[in-house]
Amino acid sequence: MRKKGSLGALVWGLSAPMTGVVCGLAVAAAIVTAGHDASARSSYDSTYGYERTWNAALRLVRVDLGFKVTEKDEQNGYLLFEYRSPEAHGASPGSIELVRAKDPESPIEVIVQLPQMPRYHEQVLVDSLARKMRQEYGDPPARTPRPPEPSPDAGAD
Image (cartoon, rainbow, N blue to C red; front, side, top):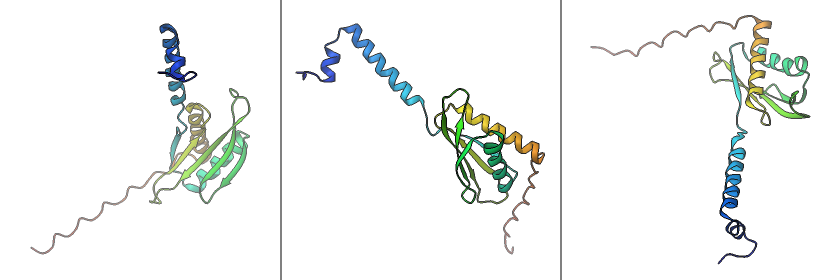
């Protein structure tokens, strides 16, 4: 027996067409809720080195785009800012993170996150940074290939 006032009583008390509508709305709400992935991000591998990449990212956000920087830490490689878009009302939080690889010759990974905006906004910032670095520093430095590791000695015959 159903309790009065329960969700089951509400759904079962509806006519068949209304039950379908309620179930359809529940599915639609689940899809919309699951569709926003807060972990989405865009990234760029910079071969310009850490210092140049950090300086270009900071100037892009603060000078070129005029966003308010709320926190920055060059040592740990992150920059928090208030992202403003003509499509949105007000500001939303944004971040740029620079990740150093263990190998000093490897590119710096630049990660842009704007969790409250569609992913293409992040990609626009990534593309703007790549273009800015190419304009200011020229073509990326060529990576010198590492010499092959010597093969281990097979020993005496």
